[in-house]
Amino acid sequence: MACVTHHVIANPSSQPSLPPPSGPSKQDGHTDAAPPNLTGILELRVNSSFVRLYPDPPSTISDDMHAATAMTPGTISPATHSICLLSGPLGDFLRYSRQEASKWLIDLAHDICDPASLVHWRPVANTDPLTASIYRYDLPVGITVGLSKISQREGKSVTTATGNASTMAGRVRERDGRCWVSAARGPIVNSHICPKRMGDHIARIVYHTFTSLAPAPNLSIYDENFSLSLSLTLDTWFDTYEMGLRFVSLNNYECHMFASTELPDVEYTIHGLYDRPTVFPAVHGHPASPPRLESNHVPPAGLFRWHYLQCVLKKFAHDDYKNLPNIYYSELPLRMEGDSDDDGTDSEADWPSKALDLGRDVENSLEEREERHRAVAKWISKTV
Image (cartoon, rainbow, N blue to C red; front, side, top):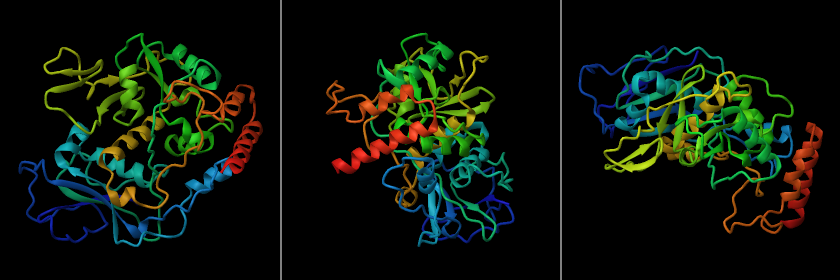
């Protein structure tokens, strides 16, 4: 049975002993009534012996087998005693844990270490307040995990007027009709939960891992289940993992703002960045939900859970975690249909995979999709 235990830091320069794996524990003399040290550091750690590193991925993820190879941990553990997964001032963590208290951190530890597992936690009590502590993720002896990979998501994607991206955008716009957060009818855009460069094959693994649902063999990153409608401003923040949606209940979420720099006299609102005071509602803590609950193909909660984890990792992931070998998602090496161009063009020279990407409109089976990827791989081998 997995558990999260924690040890309150009495002296940050000392190395505290590990609490017993039988359940939560606190250092003797600690009182919950003491005022929290908001500047003290909270850490989430895991013993390296529980972790297996990922092998080098195939040079091209051209089928489901290649994706499985890239996403399956190997047999080697990190050489260090433990890995610091998350780290930051307690006050920053409390901004996101809110009324969830320790449950928030327990959920994140679960998503990092075993998102697909049906393990029952034996945790620090869900209602315990977070403290400036070292929290450790523990597993039974002999059980190992591969840590969730990190999405860098570099660059901004914009839907074009043609091709599969346009088809996806049209379906999402018809399904939603409004922004999930502000309820604005326009201008709204199709906001991708997972980056398009992740590709279909890895996207299917993410879908299965975080939703526990079996994906259709031809499930594509361009399926409307991978998108929602947001205003232009909110899409910018969502696309760069600066805004995430925290699950509250079925089809109900809460916006959390992860922007790295909070200017003291500026408010991130649902309509943009404004000087304080402002009449516009703040993004952080604002509700979000599908505009039409009866609609089909609404993104499952597990995909938002994946995206929210990426927001947390962007803000709190420690270098121990970020520097692990092959910890970042593999991305397709070429420009994708719908990617924005720095110079505003989409010529064949700037977008060498254009013909292949647009050909997706006539693909009707997984075999045809794999054939397209083989063509991409052949193009790469000729140009490298």
